[in-house]
Length: 121
Image (cartoon, rainbow, N blue to C red; front, side, top):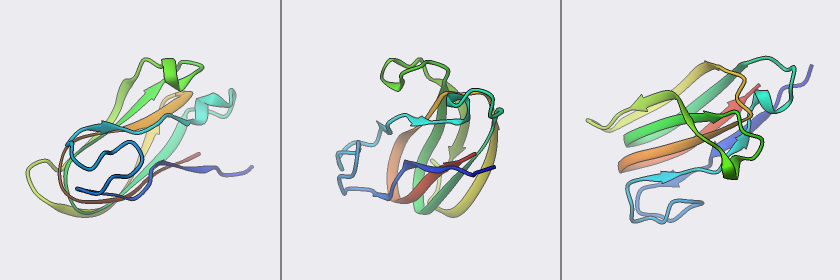
């Protein structure tokens, strides 16, 4: 059995453009990444790890059952909320669901750095 680890979001710092974040907005979506349900028959358990430093905002993990992430209908799978204060944390969470795709939605990004958000299955 092999283990797959993929980045849902790479290092992103408030005010610095990176990936889908333009550096000036508080809200942005990451791209869809293949989740455990993409490979039919691999189960429904995946672990998402959120690593943040001085982060203030909300990170929502969203999943989709669609075949293509560009056409996906996204459902909320987990919410990590530190909108009221700056937090430094390493936070793994198990998510159950045969999602074909997962992505990150960040809202209220007011401070700090998202070091990474990874998915492992």
